[in-house]
Length: 157
Image 1 (cartoon, rainbow, N blue to C red):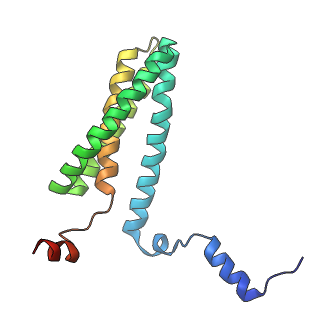
Image 2: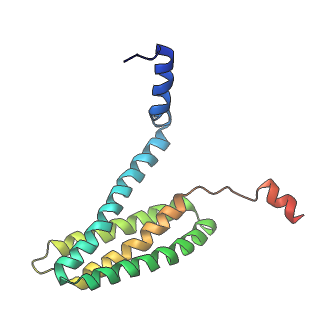
Image 3: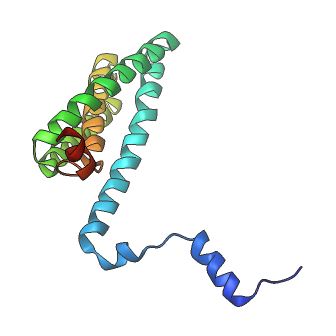
């Protein structure tokens, strides 16, 4: 097998790897990245843990399906509501409050799981509490340009 030239190899590695220069250079970006990474993993664990815990407590696939339907409705409603609030309020405060809500919901679920007789009601309540917080947090951290773009301003004039 023929080896590529060193220049081609360097170019190939440049396209095949992730540039982590912003993580090394900017402390605030590094903190944001690590915080969002931890929050993402916690949210994904919650997305799996709530249906699993509902099934373990009720042994009903119907309740698990209904839980998924309610979560889908919450996804749509709170994505719209979170977007409106994120545009009107300070995003940093909104992210901090929604992440704190996610943490409280996870702690309530963990506390319920460690009880001798965990209840289905508290699992559903803490699971439903974490979904709006998750949507609001992801909506608040998504990028949106401030103000109107030049093309929109020219069209309306």
